[in-house]
Image (cartoon, rainbow, N blue to C red):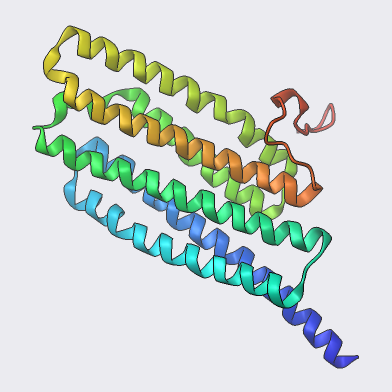
Length: 238
């Protein structure tokens, strides 16, 4: 009996370690994104390079989490809620790694702008920073929802994704106007579109993580449901 208890406690600890690793990886990606936004706004090449270098650590954590997932599935043969947790970790890990890749793209764009003499200050478009802040907050919120398995918070993150999409469209309209008015802005504007698209995709990955939280907690797949069908707090509650 003691041996069984020991195995059970060891298994619970492995699950908790895996959850903690996801949050650690998420924190690194969140820092990577904020640093990338600063580097792009300030055309800071050293800061941009630091973001690019950090991507290696994100990739290493993805590999380690994949190893942990495969080990638990092979050795423990989990079922029900535990299996949802483990497969959910795998999905969240993939989204975090891809969000890190998008942050790296933003950092690289800072280098492109420097090579082009500041890019006619495309990096100062207010909607770029505003959109980046929304995506960063979404990522942080999704990770917090994951830590607490908070379904209502996760649903709120999913609804927020529309704000990032709307800002991307606004940025695109601005940049098209600039390119039509002054052909010298075309190259820098195209680079800035890549940044705006990267931010939008980070918002998508945060949304995916929030959807994964709901799947783990409730066993419900909300990837293709309307926002009106998402969980809501009862009337009169926050």
